[in-house]
Length: 289
Image 1: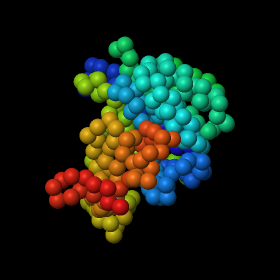
Image 2: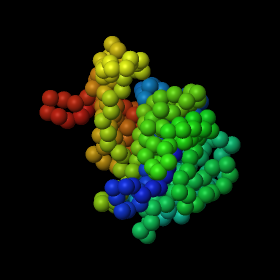
Image 3: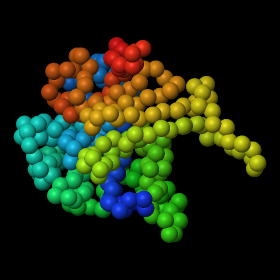
Image 4: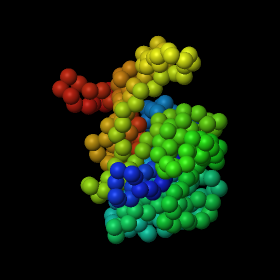
């Protein structure tokens, strides 16, 4: 089912309004059963998932969740055929597809910047909620765990959005719903460049440990200990690199680059699909299969 959460807020360090969209990457086999992926692409998806947010244009990000991702590709294809479109066009087409699909097959969050305004539109449960301060789609179990953690750690006097990232990461790590997991990916609106972009980050991940009072916390990121360090790099709105220092090769999620066997498959248009790549001695990235 997946889990996506979007919110608008005023950051303490900025006078302008901000908009962040959080998503996981896990895909269960049933949600891609009707897709015509190559065997290689299907293997990558089962290992690494799909990024559920696509920046379809600098001013519009489309996020989706549901039991059949082919309905998301229908929306992307309709937009491609139009060549140009507004926020309202995207919302209307997404609503038509949502209405035509079986229950829980597809839900959308449309995030946009149009006419000087950031906006979140949610399409789920047979209806449209426009201009939401925040919205979520996907797993009710994941959302309940997410809200419980945010509210339990939310001290009076501090804005709740400061706890969104940590709570979402913990839900992706495990929330009792096996359809939610993989990597935590964030899209944010960059007001200086007037575009949505994938948020770059560097993380250290280690196993939980019990530390007695006065003892030092050990940040062990070795493969043997189960820890790792990773980095998300996004040179373009069309793709991002997920680099795990303890693993070679890296993972590329892209709405444009495809496995050779899927390069002419139009039904996969604009899905942020994974493949593995390796950096050569000159610093260039190449497919490594």
